Length: 316
Image (cartoon, rainbow, N blue to C red; front, side):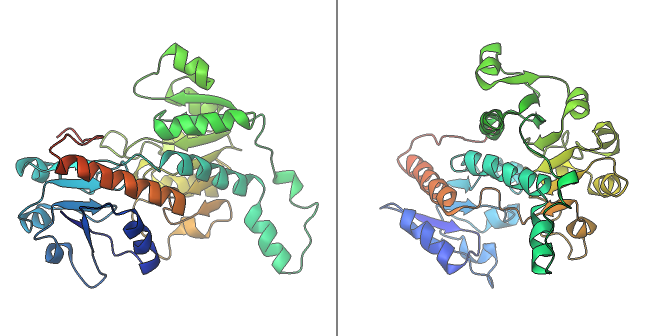
């Protein structure tokens, strides 16, 4: 059964994918000079990360059974076109939760401890042993607000509690009191979370109702020394409003793994702000996570190949 991976990954990344490929599946990887429509004709499965799966792509297939998303977001897939053609969509949450939760700490601690300023100043021959202290902070004792207590939000909560943080959360669906006690997380509304939190981290999907979830009004509610972290989807934040809030000191800083347009324009203002740590959508981008994700994705394809229902199936 042929799998077409619609991401033109480098050879060393492709080698990881092939190491995880089980018996009974063959693999074809999209090349940079090819379009998806050119390579999907005899695909039984499509494996996809960010490539757009349109009706035109699906029309080019003849044997397709399933689209397997490498991750949990699926806003790049035309759901109506898949439903009309009887094609299922499977998600791969495996290999995402832990690295993304760890990545949030990377962004927060980089901002709290002035990591890049310290590194750059040292290269310039400066020894800022004292100068960075007035604006550097411990993580312990801070209040962290998590917007979206799903898989990643839970992993993040566990780690924040280990660092000595108080954790608030808000979600469309409140978890049970027993789960709250187990995690050590306190439920509150979005506005109260924004007012109370030293760190606000986003972990919700990008939907029509969550687009620009954090805009001018929400940023105005946050503390002047607060950090905003987004390792979910770029469209959750009104980037123009964030730029204004950072310039005017409404909040202290932002850690951004994602942008509304990816990659962002080279002259995007947020890329050049000293109080922003920005990286290219790499929160789940470790070798360990990637191998875990590939094995889980292929296992889901094997289920479909055996005539079984895939797990983590999108309800169309």
